[in-house]
Length: 387
Ligand SMILES: *Cc1c(COP(=O)(O)O)cnc(C)c1O
Image (cartoon, rainbow, N blue to C red; front, side, top):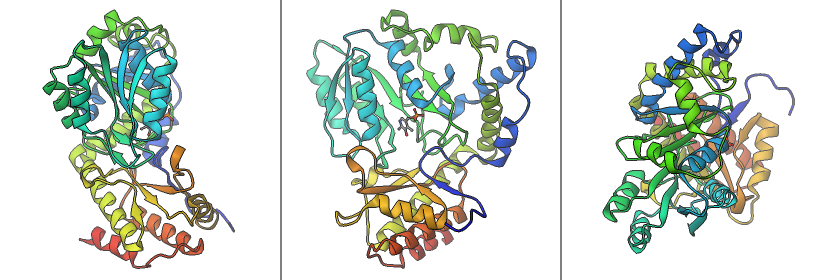
């Protein structure tokens, strides 16, 4: 790398690029979190974040990573020894499973090949077989960030209803919220988990739980130990715009600004923009003669694309060359996919020319790494963008 002039291209699927407007908002002075100005800020963002989840119910905002919000969803609704149904869709689903086991839950983990989402037919089958209703929750990662595969939550909901099963539906939307269409209330989700540093275009540091009435009722009887993550004191304090501990004030300034950006563009337009950029990215990958990891076209992710390289090429070497030569970060292969895939993040604060620059960098990096590709790949993407 000669000189770092110009902007670094942060094209990993989270953390994503933070818009200047949001950075400026975050830089405002921190205020007294027990004073009237803070209450106004908190009440405003707690209300305005709801449409992003597609809910009219409560949304809890923690000072935490997404992992904290995962834990909150489990400890608030479940009890030691409860059975939960989870699916091996990729690295993040596996980590959430590990957490559930660590907390003392019994996980039925349905194996997967890391190229497909949750199969609604398997949900129906597993729940129909559970005549005693011993499965307390179904855990689904909406957009598997390690693979670029989206599970079809409405069909999973329909499968639960078809089995007439009372299990809670817990969904991780960490890399889909504000990028891919999602509807907490309409889809009958009980807890939606998310965080700040992906589609919401904020730095890391905020974790979210959107909570259904059924989840709130389950919380009343849940016996897993909890303190920091306990919904009850936060929901009570939030009524008056306060927190039971020091809130992440500056990130909430950023959230207010990010929500204004999303409201200005309109969520349907935000989703359409992500869909279009994902289509263009897949056109490039196919044009290069490479393979998109996602194996089912109904499950393509609009927020990232995982690109599969043949065994003879090391995806991390390609990433390293791209970082050194073009100052661009791409996502690495996680877990089982280490060295075999790289991931292109195309979510958040992102436009046509950001994508064009990203794909140009990827194409040159592949060529420099000696991966045989057809150089018309990027052209194919530009045609999608121009159309
Ligand atoms: C990033 C991510 C996580 C982890 O979030 P952290 O903020 O790193 O704790 C969990 N699930 C998915 C789907 C993710 O993309």
